Length: 144
Image (cartoon, rainbow, N blue to C red):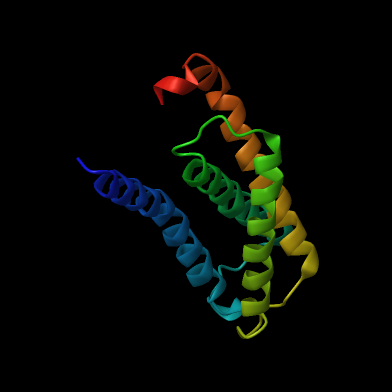
């Protein structure tokens, strides 16, 4: 296979690695598009708070896992600096999501939510790195 063919294959694999990230971002966008009146009613303000936080934790921790998985799919030996760089991507996604919600009836744009999303996404990335640390350390980088 020629170099052009190998480069093309690597580029194709890179695009496929990012596909789950963009699908998940679309799911987040769709969930954020639901007007407040159509969201399930909570029995109390406490329930509402925890349901809201749990949704953000799950949405953005999964996003964090998908983002770091995509970014490191062909270079698994990236350090913690990568996590902080990718946290910026998650922050931008959270800010865009909050801005988008400002146009949805009954929903608000809250900077604190975008910050919380970033923390949750960073947690997801760190969890991913911890879970796969032993697996990655057992391989020789030259064999990749």
